[in-house]
Length: 379
Image (cartoon, rainbow, N blue to C red; front, side, top):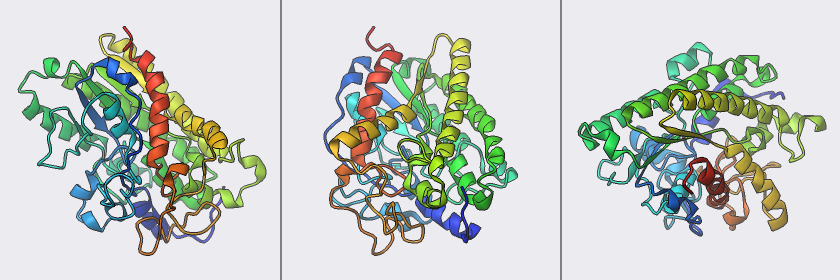
């Protein structure tokens, strides 16, 4: 994997816009399998995979961000972007629907109702703080609202919401700790550029990221959480941003059977394996808490199986310009003159970085069946 002729500054610009692109869209509701779990609240920590509007409210750029305007939100909100990184709904929206709960409001919407939970996720957020990343020569050009910051918001929220009775009030709440950590690696891979072959530097981040996620789980347990899902990473080597940046110069043997960059997917698997081990350790330490792994990687893989039989566009972005994967880091979705495809329901990728509403819906359909048994909702 090598990238030539791209400046670090250009990559920051790409990432600043790229890893942020947001928006919402609703097709069919997810099947209500998880309604049997009888959760009455949901709390979400994470990044752009889960952000329902925090970044556009906390960022001084706000409405100027690409995902704060059309075509983001074109499928879901009558062509009004809500800060979601998609053409429509996100996985957390479909989870809420499946649980029979209202869509989760972003915590930065001060006028919102938080009776049934709150969303603390921020697009572009990392698990590690900006200071720790900087020590490893990685810059977050998007937001400083890392996992620790989100946990502080959560603590402040519960101080008002629970009135010293969190254990009772949160006994039937579902906590989603992530997905988080993907941006730590995204920024590293896309900023190292020509050094990307040397993944040893980035591998050093994995135990730090997993330790931070593990710490976050312990924090939410201390707040009163009793049911926690900790999602892993998607197969990053399948995303158009990586296929465009690294894949165009790759040899045939650098791709897997799905034409994804196997080195990047191996890296995601490496992170996920470490995360599973941490979850097992946490479960042993806290036997009175249900802590399960959310297998986002396997859920994404099933899109390839379904996509081939149902005619999905698996790797080309719906909203973008040019190139083999319809992704150009200088003219991304949300930029002037960049249009979306007419049929996003046939695409897996929305903007080259995030997925379409339909892809998220299909992923949640798969995850529901998987989590239903892990969460022991059938008991």
